[in-house]
Image (cartoon, rainbow, N blue to C red; front, side, top):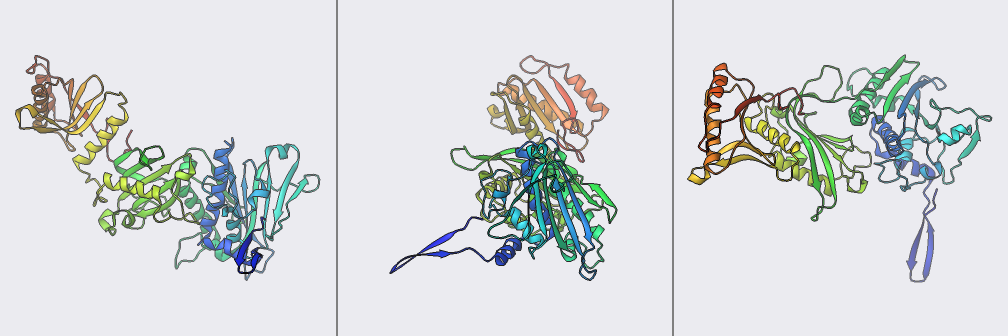
Length: 509
């Protein structure tokens, strides 16, 4: 460990103060940031995931073993936890140093305390933990490094060969982190207040929690996690837990600039809409005041959820129980990302990046909609259509505009729902959320005539709706055999919201 000193100036000269902390006090202080076992495991998994991503690990596998420890009296049961990863190993001479943060192995280890803090949180007595690690080169050389409790100012790191001591890992190389935890700490993994809790309940709860927090990494094959316990006859791979989306309001990627000259920026991958119920037994993504609101992820990892008051300064209302907004803030530069709290269970107050993101969100949504379920307005659907058209029209001359005014030359302008100019052709969209009526097609023809009067030449007028009566389709055929004021044939057509990728129960394409 690096020994720090403080220089104290006084009237008689300068003296040097040895500020090395007491080992016991230091260890307890390091582990005091975590409220439960889930947070401790997440700290360790963050480090592993960072290693997998940065070193582009081919087989990003993790096995978490939890076994009862029968070597202790039954009155005070304990459990041995062993976390195996198939990574590239770690440099213990750096990892064990308090505050060391020069290594890029963890993309969200801001402070250089995480790994030690997790060990201290799991084993506050500082008497039952160990770390074994080796690279692929060490594996080929049949050697590895290890260290074990207690944590001291001069921590011994051993280098040995498999001829002297067997490798304890599940995988040929990587890191094996082991520690002993109390039954009471294990039970903090469950959310079963006032109910009898069994160890296997905690394993199931951990599996669901990891599937929720790391759903992005799991879905994109950046990591796989398997939880095992021979004594409890449990072996299950963690599956990604994602919302059961109903109606989507918005889904896209937004660039958020963090400075006035628009050089520093983050990307926000957002999905906003209606959350439907799940039937798979986990506690996440159920329409409720606890689950509804804004969920903030950083590079795919959940940091905070259930936010409404923090963003809109309004209390949650039961009518908003179906509202869900997932914001995944991404960047390859960790300095631009929001800074999380030490336990990574929230974002620090007044963080510049998160405030910029919230400012954009408030412009997009004035306040969370109430009674979202199947009650999104026509305007919401047209806003989605606008986003889609902008996303798929990259021509430099393209112009896409909601509420586009026609009949401007006559002094009595009216608004077309959506104008799309793709760089060569002009399209007019009229949207009806429910079944279209004959009146709608006559409106669309009127907008066409307004464009012509203003000197524009539409290529096609498109009516978007869920369904169309046969008589409406017959009228379109009749109109398309007629000519506008410029002598061009009308070109009216119909399409559905579903074809456009905008429909309840289906994500945007």
